[in-house]
Image 1 (cartoon, rainbow, N blue to C red):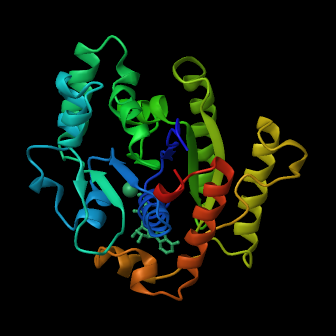
Image 2: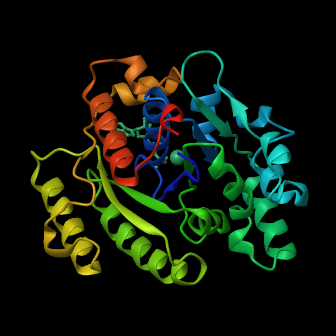
Length: 289
Ligand SMILES: Nc1ncnc2c1ncn2[C@@H]1O[C@H](COP(=O)(O)OP(=O)(O)O)[C@@H](O)[C@H]1O
Ligand SMILES: [Mg+2]
């Protein structure tokens, strides 16, 4: 099909450790496995997605990385210059997945350069992502754990959709999430009014504990109050991600959870999530285009 434009999905939460990178990496693996050409943008200076995907320390990518993508004027709407910042994964760990690696100095350099030189500081990434929507089938953006960061602003400024992971083993993540939702609704009404909320994704979740049940209930209640989940008829994301120590092992081995432990329940969780998003957003595989 012609005129296909890849959705751009940002995974964000101002809290660290709630499963953003795990979600990005395993969604990328799943989309790639079913035949989508996937681009991952690592916007977190800590570079955990880059390490997981590229098996590298982000210090290794000194030349072409997210800083050169965002801060060079040459990359603006320029596919061949943007391509110089994109790396393929060729060792068979991930299929059809490409990524722009992070850089340790991203926060300082990008914040300075963008806030000083740009008259639309929240829209710098957009001019680098838009031209790639014709080339990839789905684009995923991993964010730093900060909602006020100019980097998260750029991710939300160019996304078509966003997901907020919430670790239900920590009650703090609920209050952080409510602040985040209010902030996003407020901010993006100017810079990206078409941004669509795909839903919260409960991570490390178990329906067996009362506190986790309570958190899930209050998140759902807040989603209803936001008007994004009318009448509670359709859950925004009708799955949650279980907890498993295999998640950490997979990241140490730089593998998708499915390749680390094929029968693991988390592998099934992320498969379900990818299928749900694919059907909801009508994401094409390369063969279907
Ligand atoms: N579903 C899960 N079960 C168990 N551990 C998890 C799960 N999801 C993430 N983790 C672990 O929690 C830590 C933080 O996850 P990560 O995805 O890096 O969070 P974030 O990107 O939000 O900081 C990592 O050590 C990861 O292996
Ligand atoms: Mg992370």
